[in-house]
Image 1: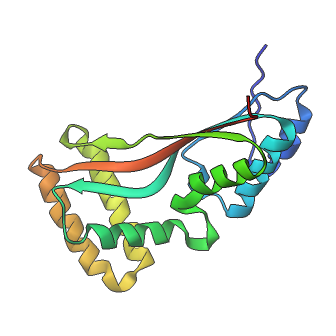
Image 2 (image 1 turned 45 degrees about the vertical axis):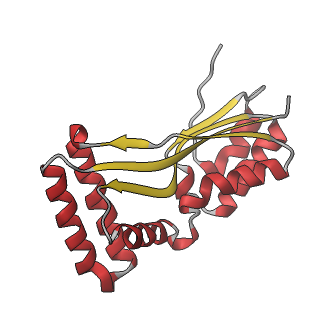
Length: 178
């Protein structure tokens, strides 16, 4: 039968050890919130216990908008810096975990899984650009007005149904080599 065990990343080793034969560790939209030390612990647990890991929707730092805007690159850079605050892995998480797992002899398959959104998903796009602009302003407060103007233009484009967004994500499948 299947037994579902839920717990925090800090307890992964103990949780896996409590199971007769753990098979899978999975999460979605989490790795980028972890510190590199936590990712190393995750890689250690996967390698030690032979557990398959399936990690979905980890942001990779790319954020493409159409039509382009001169402020896109600086906003994306500030947002990515915000994601790395407090030492978190942020948009480097998937690549970092993949390197750690390969260094431990595990096989890693990576695939790009970008979100592609446009005016048909206007509420989601609006929330996405608002949250990105707000995070960028926290990371670089001196540029808050610039990011606010960027946001105003992007929301106007969304209202005119001419804005599309692609948010980069990576999925990882980690397992013992075949």
